[in-house]
Image (cartoon, rainbow, N blue to C red; front, top):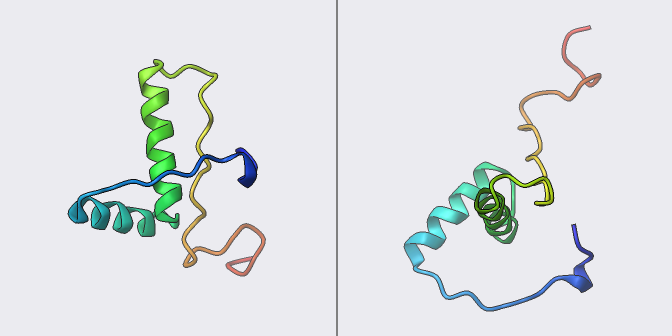
Length: 76
C-alpha cells in the first residue's frame, strides 16, 4: 500500500443512502469508510483486468474480537 503522502485525495459526492450502506458494510468488515471504498475499487479493478496478478491484493479484515487469536486464551 502507498505511503500516506503518496495517496491522492479527492471529493466524492455520494447519495446518502449509498453512504449509509457503505458505512454499514465497512463497520461489519472493521474498516473505515475510506478503506472500504478503496477495497471495493481495488476489487473492481482486479475484476476488470481479469484477475491479473499485478492488481494489488486487498488486506484481509481482522478476525472478530469474540474469537481468541491463536495461542491466546481459549482451550489448551
